[in-house]
Image 1 (cartoon, rainbow, N blue to C red):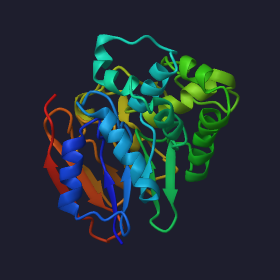
Image 2: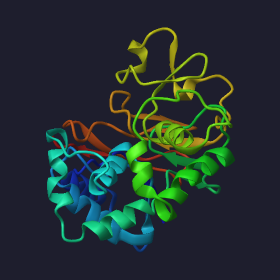
Image 3: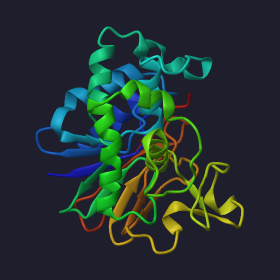
Length: 273
């Protein structure tokens, strides 16, 4: 049995299937970890989402910011615009409700103690341990699965608050958690989320650091697998794996095997959109 983590798909169904062929992936034997952003921008979001759903229990995927935005569009909490035209076929699908219900059941963070590995879409706050990361993610997951998820999807947009406090409550608290787990890249040296820079971290202002380079990070002894940051590209270190290698921008779709001491890296050509 092999465990493979794969970077952001973003509706790139054909490269995804080619990558699975390269891996000789067998659903009855192997397991996939997906970094989220299953849909949007690529040409086959509907086909991608249906395929991942039908793979069943052999897949563990987390929610990305594009997945959440799709849910907000489907729930009519935001207006449909030209920027999201790639989601048009998905939003008109006869099984839209079924797909949305399935997607809302997916977590924002997934942890495997045996592999000592945490899967998130974007990152986790330096002051959050694994236990706290999973607990914060569960707050959002509970609303998406069992609460007034339409209200949450309508109020999740915005860059504030930009600093964590245990006293945060309501929509502000949930918005911060969502931003941290699905949108975060850079942070200020005093611990605030910063969304002004989405390029390479080495080109950022001096007062900004990638979230994984913040001092006293509570998760530094756990391997973290994430996507979201295509300009960061592929990083494979003992305790950090960055997997968004820009498939939707015509670069590569990347898989890394997680259950071996020396990770196996497999790539296929992406899909220029």
